[in-house]
Image: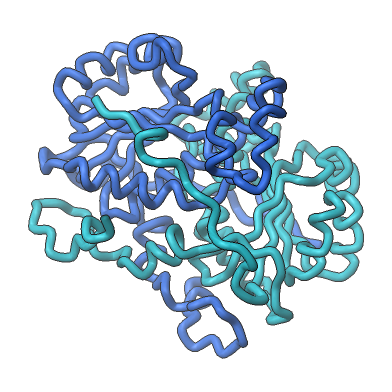
Length: 213
Length: 213
């Protein structure tokens, strides 16, 4: 199977530099990477976290609307405010992580349209009047960008520990009380304390997930 | 900014092989990659499409539930069935692409739980009785996996053209009439015909998207 990724000798006429993502990078991003549950105390500095966002933000969204937001929690005070809102079983994971990203969506993303979608500035007023359409944008493009974010963490040489078990209303009240941000995922970030204690869980067989016409 | 990605000399104690995703790979995945709107006639064979899925399926989902499905459309007959259900402005894009992926979510993902979540097989019956909880899983993890898929296309040296403008009910009736699959995104795949005719649209400034505690 893996031989199909070895594209370095591909001789088609194309403007795509086919060999720029090598087999080793693909393994680090997808096939070898594991979700981390505990972390070493090797720090992750703010420049590195900024770098993760700097990658994430360039991947595509519908009409370039970019509804994802991120709160990086890395001070002891920030951790203390965050941990009570996580499911109990998740607290030790985030306590151990040198940085935790609270991923959120901004329901008022349309206010940025004149800047981010300069070819259709009138969409700001359109979305302002259509909150249900805004929800449609955030509910799809928020998790889409969360997928980019998780792979960007790995692309920066760090391990990600995404967690859905938390009290979103509690986090929103604590961190975003007068804001249009709403938390959707918590991602622990750092250097894993060691290999996971269990093997990888199975992925679906191709015939259960892929069809062809 | 980019200097922070140069991790090759990082000397922390970590089990993560920090240099496996280099600056060139990060550019090809995130910062240099562009959405493609027209494609060359260089073919994309089925092994390559299988390879895209082979990467996508290993990235993490909530409780390993993996609700994303994909229909690869690459025959003339398949294209003829697909194109009428796309927004008119999107038809030339998919007509030009050597392959088109219809990304879908499977509302009956729980039937696979004994295989994919062997530590909690009882969740199959739990989710069977909770269709609203199933919708919560698919509505978040479907787009999350769509994000992985788009970056996997790029990781395989191809260009992706994701499109939200299509008649989902029409596609579902045409391709998934007796199935629990529901289309959520259409992604054109191939070698771009040339550089895009316009520059990249702006991304949000950090201060509009990132907060710190």
